[in-house]
Length: 125
Image (cartoon, rainbow, N blue to C red; front, side, top):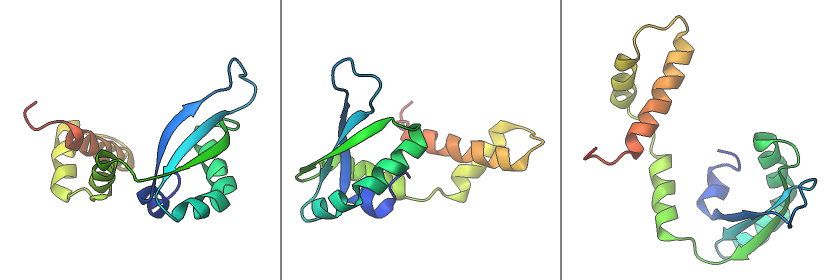
């Protein structure tokens, strides 16, 4: 959502770390990137940092470190699941449980969120 689907498909955040007790400066974000895409991410790092800081707050992340290597399989599976669009039936099932709302846009947004949460839960719960 923050960096876009193309970049997200070829990279994954590894860790966020701070330099000791230094709270005035933002954290260091380490990102794992597949193959030759590492050079592209390096060139895009100012834009990536800007987007992250717009989302989480100014100065949250000060630097970006790139580690080249294969992405974990579980991360790739999670990415594929996130990219699968919600079916209307999933959204409608959650909307039915919400009841009446004065704001239909809010109800739809909550239904989409609820459908995503329901999708993550194991089937046997």
